[in-house]
Length: 370
Figure 1: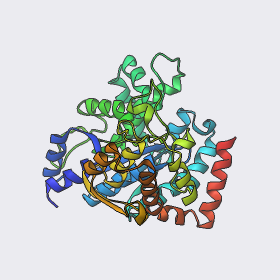
Figure 2: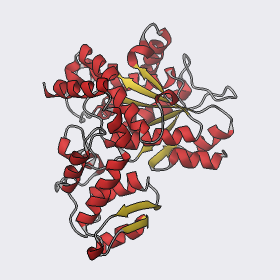
Figure 3: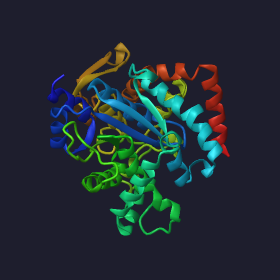
Figure 4: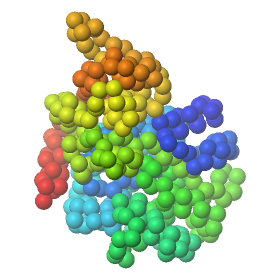
């Protein structure tokens, strides 16, 4: 596969690559590409993680990239996930969250052994160089910069935080260098940490990142598209961060193990006014999930013959035009989208029919209900 094709696979359905020229140079240098994406262990796995993130992992694998999925148990503790209870975090990591990601990968034809799953415990235990790297990163980040960066934890500026919270950004940055990652992957919400990683990379002496020629380099950072929640925007919420799908708003999210009935019910209740193409989660999902960020693809809307019969869209712009003009009705769009998601998630549902996974899902829901 040539450089152009690899760049296309790595960067498609993404908002930005920091920076594209560096990615091309890295590929041309012959340096093995090593990817990672990290996840806190918190709620149930929704489509933003299960389809959007794991779909990008599938793209990276097609481009010949070695992929690592970091199950961030320590970061979950720092960010007060699951009550900052180590026992709950570690149980959920192995028994639910990892299995949900494996299930999601299956939706793209990817098997567990094609990626490396790593926990913080795995990475940090008896690993002196990691903690040396963590401290060296901290030496190159000012306190004010670090405070600005805690938004990666979902915390706003100006709020009082505990000391442990300040460990989070440099720990996340150190992870990149400890794992030898030259292709860091996340949503735009992690951009601040990635920018720090790129800026401190040339200054590190303990564990610098190098290319095949032995030159010190900065990691390439790939920021995927975020998918919208199913709820409608409030007057003050017309920005991407507030509109994204959230596991803390169950009615705004579809989870990878939802039943077909649950999926259809949620989509039927979704915000999607006729002829409205701005801040429309239905169209956002068709663009980012069905068409995978491209203008061409295939999306079938099944309709009775008396209402004009089936529609087969191979061009996203045409679909938007039809919706805006009223030729495509919200109910038809919702039915088509529900059909697609139900079919796409079948491998994930099958994975959670395995008895141990089914039990883990029940226990995870109980844990979250406490």
